[in-house]
Image (cartoon, rainbow, N blue to C red):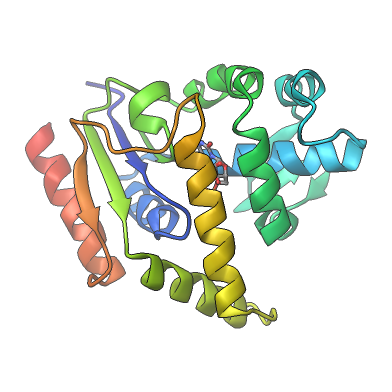
Length: 218
Ligand code: C5P
């Protein structure tokens, strides 16, 4: 096909974003960080004074989200919000707005629009189950809870932010519980997805595994 899709779904802080971006780069494909769209929606709602629980109004904002990705940055209108959308409270807000069916519906076409030649690597929670169910390769990428908390902790410290490992563990498990328990597009491994546990893998090894699966799939 002229537009192959690789989906990489998994829990927060599993490293799926890093792996997905590198796979896209190595294959020369486009990359969709779908979580960023939910984060942008949460940030936009916050800035517009709309509560994260207000389904109708958050969905209205999602439908007209003035978001774009260019120059390696995420933009809300003219503002570079790359750092702002990575904040822990925005991650939590993203998982709240992501539980609202009308918000997910409003973002669906927007995500599918990323699929143009020469193809796409998409990461998130429901890329293989809902957004691109006919993907050539589906990966469910995970790591143990301890490893994920540690990776997030190191990320924050490297950015010069303060971080508390116990708090991070709690945040990650709250977010995963909400993502897995929700009625629409819950986080779970699809029957046709390859399981990739990266707890004991380097980034290079994880990328190599996805590339070799893709080689066999096409
Ligand atoms: O992947 P990331 O941590 O940036 O995603 C933030 C939140 O957005 C997740 O906790 C999840 O609730 C939501 N999300 C989603 N579906 C996706 C991607 C992200 O529900 N495809």
